[in-house]
Length: 202
Image 1 (cartoon, rainbow, N blue to C red):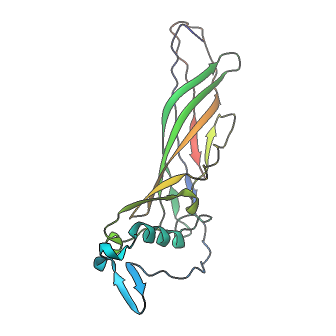
Image 2 (cartoon, rainbow, N blue to C red; image 1 turned 90 degrees about the vertical axis):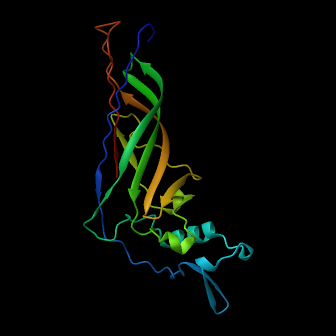
Image 3 (cartoon, rainbow, N blue to C red; image 1 turned 135 degrees about the horizontal axis):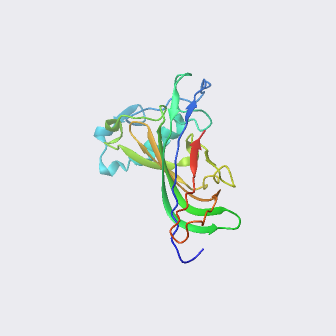
């Protein structure tokens, strides 16, 4: 359609997810706040530059041993995971009047709390955030109602997530979606087109 503007309104919703009981893990415990050398344990406060201790690597390994990618990130069965979702429109790719379809390119900004991977920053040299592969962690699946595709594409294998000391996980997901969008040109050229993209997670 040419000659007059179109406006697209994104209506976003997020849903809460019921948690279930997580199975007991058989992972071996990991020493927190330092590294063991021989029979001596060196705390993070005693690390010197010449020790060549990689605090980021130590923290990443610590998170990896505690993360449960196939279980909801809550410790109690009746607790819910609140997934906060915001979408930013990048581009209106196409608006097909005949097929009543709108195609958009956007980014989903989502965050939630993973109760298994919070840490004490003083145990890791003051590190209060880190970027790790998203495949290590539990992550929600996003669904777009009114969309032709339904579920959004799978996460990229090399995608990363920002994790903070309090267990907050944040990630950005690029999407391209096609949604049903009835086009009414009765008021042309002063018409406004409203296309609804409702997002939920589970």
